[in-house]
Amino acid sequence: MEEEKTSNKCFKCQKYNAFYTKGIKEFNKTKCGWCSGKREIVNCQDSCEKYEQRCKSYMYSPGAKRCLNSLLTEISEVRKILEAENEENKEMQNL
Image (cartoon, rainbow, N blue to C red):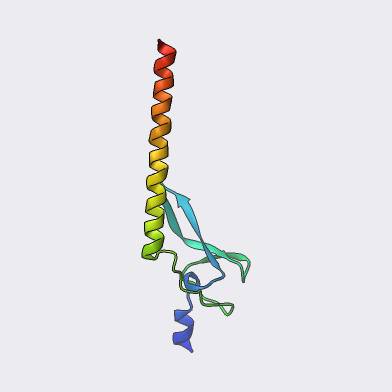
């Protein structure tokens, strides 16, 4: 029973949503979050009787990474086009 209790950590529960703080270049995961079962802020290492195992996430599959990389490349190209048009408009106004 004790072993079961120690393996049921909040960060593995589907009712746990971690908090993030904004860093310089990315968001950083904190060691606490919101438990929708208890309806309070909990530590990620806590455990409780309302534990429900989180389903395995396939969000970071290779296909998803390729798709995101492709979208980011397209967005970068659109940005380059818009910046080039902006530069052309500035040059036209200076003439």
